[in-house]
Image (cartoon, rainbow, N blue to C red):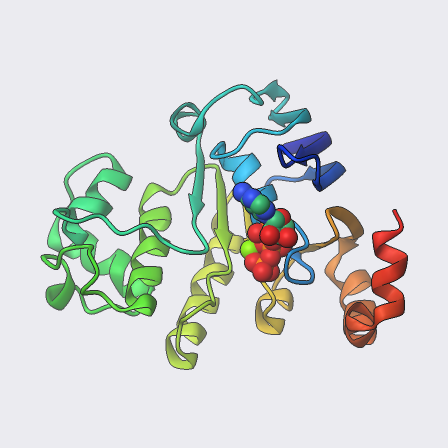
Length: 243
Ligand SMILES: Nc1ncnc2c1ncn2[C@@H]1O[C@H](COP(=O)(O)OP(=O)(O)OP(=O)(O)O)[C@@H](O)[C@H]1O
Ligand SMILES: [Mg+2]
């Protein structure tokens, strides 16, 4: 279980990007975090992964305060994060990257199984360099595969749908559904996609750096769609920015 207590993040100039976020993200469930662009979702994911540190507040993992731990220390505690925009590594192959994530050498069958989940044909890809020659969608799928390979107790996927074609996306939904049914840990997906929202157990709506709504999918989803146009209406923006 992840617990965020009065979490805040400010830019050096003083702009408040996250404003006192109080959240409990349970284990054994899929929590989907959604909300308008710029609402603070990626920032929140970075706080959890430890690539950025909160200005104030706490992050607890199963009751342990991990706020001061860096990304490597948090990875050791079992937190994995798939970036919204994956990082490319010149000189590393797809096999290297997935084996690094898994923490051990993998057979071709195992590599095939993992890459197959994200719709990549292993033999064509395992020896490719993870550099600029891979397309954006391929890179994104490899990034997701590294988190699947790690299979840790907290997994955060930032917009896994971004840049993924419709056909591979269906397969990916099945993978998340399967993970959700099997995992005992915490699965967090940041997404704008209705199909991902529909498989969520819980939904968190983040807007203007605050938790705007939070609860079971069946309670949040109807109001979310009813509200969709309101989020973009200037009056609503005014109300939100008033906080
Ligand atoms: N390092 C930074 N310097 C300046 N502004 C930043 C920085 N990081 C985030 N922001 C700003 O904080 C706000 C929240 O950004 P964030 O990336 O968390 O949004 P998001 O909810 O993930 O949006 P999207 O749906 O577009 O991915 C944005 O206005 C963004 O420009
Ligand atoms: Mg984002």
